[in-house]
Length: 242
Image 1 (spheres, rainbow, N blue to C red):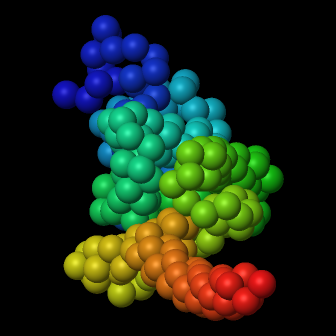
Image 2: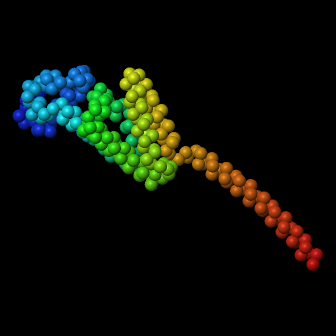
């Protein structure tokens, strides 16, 4: 039985149920074909009841974007909070955005339907922009923290965040085109490694650099010691002749 027919279901739960079904209709019918009647049929209620919650399909779409944002933020908060150490948070963050749970959280058809509509509908565009800005701000906050704690190299965190988001979006698009989950996982792992290499201090390189510096220092010190010994020897000879 649909949750809409249960008298004790809260208003918010009912709205969420409608939005979940709306996603499925978008997947099957596309935005143009996702009528109120079809959505109501999917939910299993009279269309008039749906209009009680969402007067128009536009209102439903606007709230769907907010619903998608909430899903991403909930997953992000859960994942990040589970990591106690700063370096572990960095790994967790990248595992999350390049992982299968992230891309599977929202149906791609529904997501891109909203994205497509944002070109024609100002309200939907504003909601999409809000979603991306919140996503960007969350990653930016973590990147700045990692820099402050010395986990990653100092640099422009804004550029780093834009780079990560571009990879995430490119990977999602590639998955929909290639249609391969395994390929997505492989590329996600590759992208994560590339981002880590870009962000983190290359400890091996640092060690090698330090070793080279020590060798140079030792060489210069040895030369100086030899020169001093020669000077001491000469001075000793001069003293003996006095």
